[in-house]
Length: 148
Length: 122
Image 1: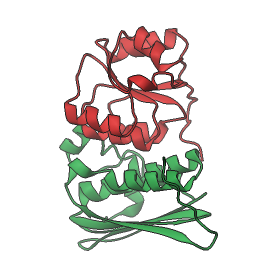
Image 2: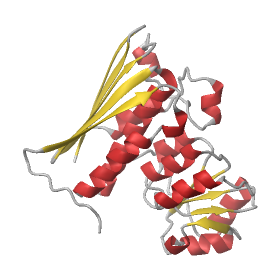
Image 3: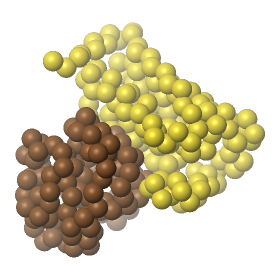
């Protein structure tokens, strides 16, 4: 039998994961767990896909670029909020990083099928609210909200 | 087209998910770039790829793909097959090249479902 999570209008489910830079073996597992929980809550599948894709893109960015980070999902009945806060090199020019095709990912990441410079624009496309704050030499925080 | 028909069309060997071949395939994404899959995957999309790594399975799971066909006879290792099994993603391997495999599916009625400038819908 599948587990079902019932979520009242004022309740939320929070999950938090520690991400470690360059740990490619587990990259995407945090997003996969968030997706499983959304399925158990019974969120619509097209909404889940948008949450899963945007969180996976953001999770991959932390694994690729940062030293470590924390990923938290707050799931409310009407929306999901995803926050990723990393310690890393930060982004010097955010508007440049938001351009499709711009990437600073190393070649081995491209060989894995990532680092095409599509991640940030895709997060914007999949989410209803997207915010990115970054400080060079400190780290980057991405906040995303997807309405259910 | 059903996954079972995809298997016949591509003369593919099923590596996991034999019980899931009744799934309907509306369109196919032929890509080695998982970033593109994440940006353009639509409902009931099958992935044809020549890229063999664990991220292919995670990409398939997170973007709700109906299955994965590895082309050019590339066989994933047992870790990849096992993870696909756990995540409920059928995996096949076909000896056709990417171009040939895409062409055969297209000729058999699986369209691209993609308009110019089209991307993931909100």
